[in-house]
Image: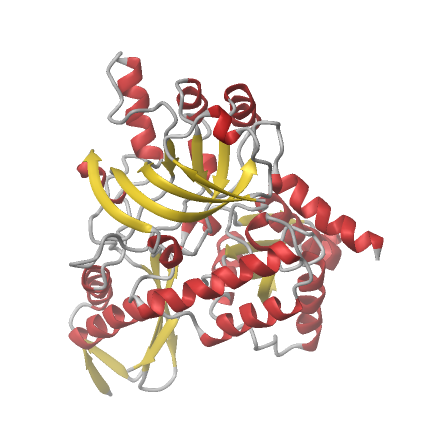
Length: 187
Length: 279
């Protein structure tokens, strides 16, 4: 199935999604990699507000290349999400609804996805030019000193994503290869 | 004796950093096309198609193929009849600074692995220098992304582990990496030498075009076997499932000690970049 979603999203928006479905995502997406996540945790520890509204939000794990003059963004594919595993459950429990990246997540993140009715979506790893085409506006929110790791607000249109972890516990990185191998066994 | 000014090396490295990051080598693009044609699994075929679209977008919009424009690994084969006027290493680092600046490439290097302050210009390069005969200087720039680099492994096997042990280690490396290194992957494999030599061989193996087989039929056959085993894992493009897990691989072997069998696997991705010039 293919779904069209616009952020911020609700649990109800996400509940029909299953591992292997594709999503065209539009709306606001915030960027954050490990360095930014570490600072987000420090803010929470200090009891201070986060630099963006977390409820129903989508975070994209990306560090784009610098934009050329007149361009919105440079190349902007996903980074390996596993480096955010330590931080993600806390944000999901606070209302973050969508994680966008690539690569495997640990069981703690999977549990947090199920608990909160969230999703983990894969962007195309290594396809930075293709992902950049969907970004219509970019604005640095905070921590410019982090360079490519600064938190940015992106306005995206029809960003092509694939559901990896769904609210029912589905995991495409398990079920996808298994289904392909089973199709060979049937022949 | 032939003289090459250091400034010429800087200019060449800068050009190569930009070219390598925007245009995929023809052999890697061809491997992607070939694998797409033979991919039986629909989602995998669709995913490979999008990776091909990405190459077109990168070219048309003058964008880096991947946002991880990598650590600049620079391989230099320096003819021993060449005299370089100026500081060779500094010339290479300056080329990286210039290329990553002028090319709007991402600066991904931190000056210290634990204190982690970004150098801001993607320098220094990781330089591998080899002295060869002649009066030419061949420079190859390999921008290496770390999504795949992080999935690389090195094992000190026992001689008794033999060919089967090496095969198992390589296949396990790809299985353990799963979706993380942006499959379909490309592998550089180093067998033999010492602890450090095996890793250097593995990285150097990534320089060999994917349509060139190992000159020794024994290793050429081993390469074919490994490719087939890896593409039976089912991981598929991006780890979504499918046949195409690996686009190609190259083995480099070297003499080793009677007591050892080092093997190193340098994992690279479908954006395996390299660009070369001869000065």
